[in-house]
Structures are given as C-alpha cells and as structure tokens.
Length: 81
Image (cartoon, rainbow, N blue to C red; front, side, top):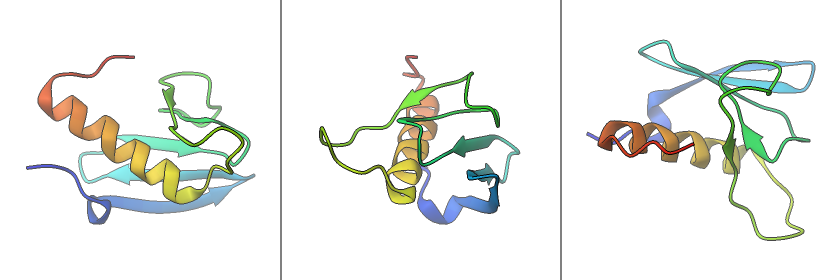
C-alpha cells in the first residue's frame, strides 16, 4: 500500500516551519526557505531534497510530494539519503 496525501496529518506551522505527521508517528518538517524536507524541526537532520525546476518557487505542495516520495521509498526498502 502506497502512502497518499490523505495519509499525512498536517499539524500546522510554527515560526514558518510546517509540520506533517503520519499515523505511525513519523514527523516531517518544511520551511519556505528550505529546499528540502527534514525529520526534525530545525531542518538540519534527515534531509530529503525537494525536486523543483531551477529558479522555481518551492511550495507546500512540493513538500508534501517529497514527503510521500520518501515514505513510499521507505516502504519499498529503497530509502537512499
């Protein structure tokens, strides 16, 4: 079973950092200034690069897409950081 956007619970934004959590308790964070998602609130650890066209603006939708990609790679056992 692949993860879908409905499987992510948006927990809101604090100081510009947006947070999603899975039903299993795994958290992901993103700030509009980051070109990655992270697995902790400062954004320093557990980085996963967000794919966006060069010069393009990174949006909350890009962050969700990247979170889902990471979760689904983990399901397949192909998580490469």
